[in-house]
Length: 261
Image (cartoon, rainbow, N blue to C red; front, side):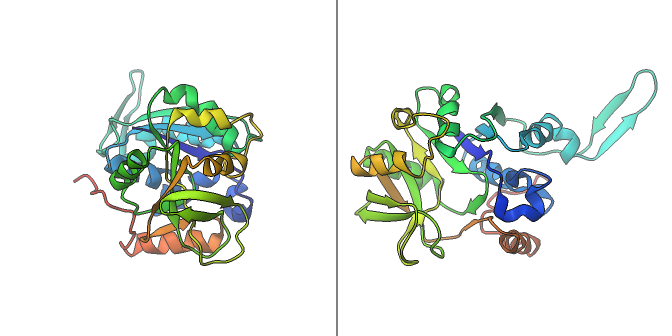
């Protein structure tokens, strides 16, 4: 299943890092946040990625164009017939990465809209380039198909500053961008969607989390998959340091994969 990742925002609340690079490239344990997200999806067998680039997107392009160089020990043979030998093995040889320029000012719905031609006529996954979780992606996909809806999002319960959800069972009946309390489940991303989502994405200025999701909720075409495990976004320097600490202590809940020997 293809995975669309929104990587184009400016990350203004993490200005200490994002003044120099896009937020998905902020490192956790020496690897970009984006790499951690992609490794997580790949662990569940989802290895076709569509990265929606915007702010400083050239950093992400350079990273993947030079992936072997960036992730390996290297021996160079200099001279008139130079050679490069990569010593380090990795598990990313079968990844397919589409790097899609979606515009620096384009909103989340607009970025998703631009990605749909690369998605094709199949169910796909969508997430943000700044959040980590240990959500069961197999169970999430099954929940989406069982609900027979246009989109399913992962509902989590962190401190309240995200889009609050009104629920009727596993169907979302309301979507409020500004929650009034910190006790209701909120949008944690990690979506599963059908290509028909494009019908509610009007332009580059469309914000996915506003009218599109509100319309789907009103038509009972938006479902929630409840996740009570680990979920953490990286909006601030403190949150970045917390994720860094988990990784350093080998206690990162999202690290389900084994490193190559």
